[in-house]
Amino acid sequence: MNQSFYGLLLWIFLVAPPVANFMESVMVIHMHMQMPMLVIAGMLMARFFQKRFPGFFEKWNSNGVPGITLFVVIMVYWMLPRTMDEALTSHLVEGFKFISLPFLAGLSLRDSWRKLNPFGKNSIITSFTVLFIGLGWLYIWSPVQLCNNYLVIEQVTLGWGFLTTAIGMVVYLGYNFFIDPTAYK
Image (spheres, rainbow, N blue to C red):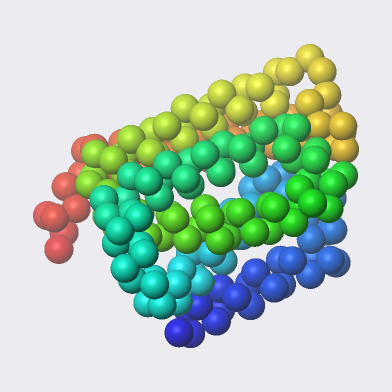
C-alpha cells in the first residue's frame, strides 16, 4: 500500500500547476522527465488496482500482450510533436496526458511486463530503440520547427536526448544478449 501511496503523491506533485508549468516550459524536460515520471507514478499506483480488481486484469491481460499494446499506443501518441503542442495549448489534451500516461500506460506496463516472455520484452525494447533513433533523427535534422511552442534549439536538444536514450537501450540489449543473468544468481 505504501508504494501506491507514493505513486499517488508523485502524481499529485506532477499535476500541481507550478510543477507542470515548469516541466512543460522546457521541451526535453517535458518529454524525457515529466512523461516518464507520470508513467512511473502509474506503475507505483498499479499495485493498488491489481489487488482491488485481480479478476479484471487476469481476464483482460492474461498474457500481457493487450496491456503492452495499450502502453505502446499511448507512448507513441505522446511522442508526436503535434501532441506535445496540443498538451500546451489545450487544457483538455493536457488533462488527457495526466490521466492516460499514469492510469493507462503505467498501469498497463506494470501489469504486462512480468507476464511477457524475454523475447517479448526484448522486442518492445528494440521497437522503442528504433523509434527513439527515428525521433532523434527527426528532431535534430528537421529543417522546420516541429513544435510551435518550443524553440528550434530545444527541438535539437530533445533529439539528442532521444539518441542518447537509444544508445542506452542498445547497450542494455547488447548486455542482455551476451551476458547470461542466471550465471550470477
